[in-house]
Image (cartoon, rainbow, N blue to C red; front, top):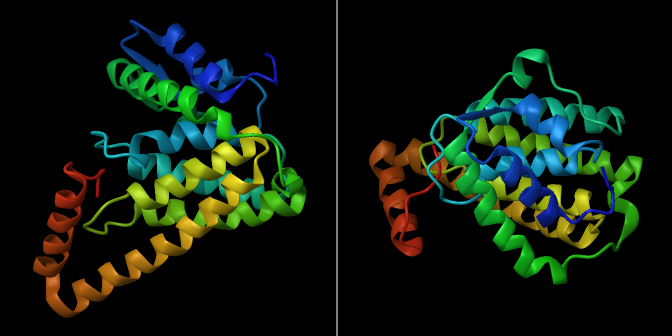
Length: 218
């Protein structure tokens, strides 16, 4: 495949090939994206939880796979590998169509802001640093914290963009969101310890009210 292909073009191509399919396995997704390193896979695995879309059942298994990918980034691998069992993980066709259609439109609008810069992002040291952030955020995704998985998934989503488009600024922005997410989860744990489930549920209701939607699985 063309390694100069834009991320929005990759997502659109995936959407066209999966259209009408009842389900799509993660292995098939990897075959279709070709050799684009970790970035595009981080984007796709974080898609279900990065925005408040109905994604029940995806956050925990995808979070675990993201932990595996993060460890590979830390180990210095340049191409991702996932176990056979994980490659057989299924994405329901209608959900894939909805998810990829939304993000194809999203990227086609913001892609003018994304460009190669701050080239540290795709160095061995840069991938190792980002691997630490991905592992931490993926770990938060699989924790049974009664709030939302949106923030840590969004961090991984931004890092995936940075790696795919060689844009260190987006990756740095992901790091800033990671710090905010860590403080958010620490605050949720504090509420749970001191006020129990009722305190956390009140905060969850406030956040839903601010955004006017339900959060991701959590």
